[in-house]
Length: 170
Image (cartoon, rainbow, N blue to C red):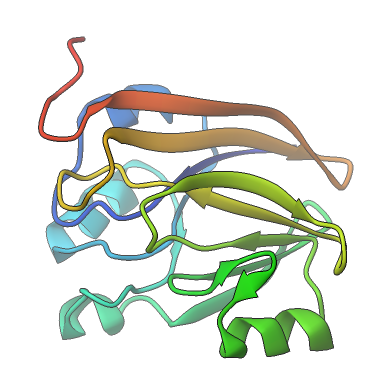
């Protein structure tokens, strides 16, 4: 079993509460728009990180993270990218990938909209953790925590960090 902490769209801001919520996680997955390499370095110093770069990320982040990640975790095929859309509204690039070789779990960021929805047509679970930074139009900063065990996703928690522009009190 692996415990995963999933976040996206930090946009150069890392809420200290994330370390508390991800304390028991084995890995942190970042779905892009890190913003500043220091955010990535702080996460990497805390836990192993699997991530992708986003559209705002500069060369310092793009040198460390790829556009796409495709990997297996506890028997689950995972595909992660930053900009990709969601079931029924995929970008062409992601639609081609999913239709040619569908993963079990497809993760993206970019929209700042928290979504966990099945793609019944392609038998894929889509997750977007929303945004946990302050930049953007989202109202609530969110992250996701879940377990992967026996080729299943279990114990999925959506965590609200507080309104955009504020820190949640500890």
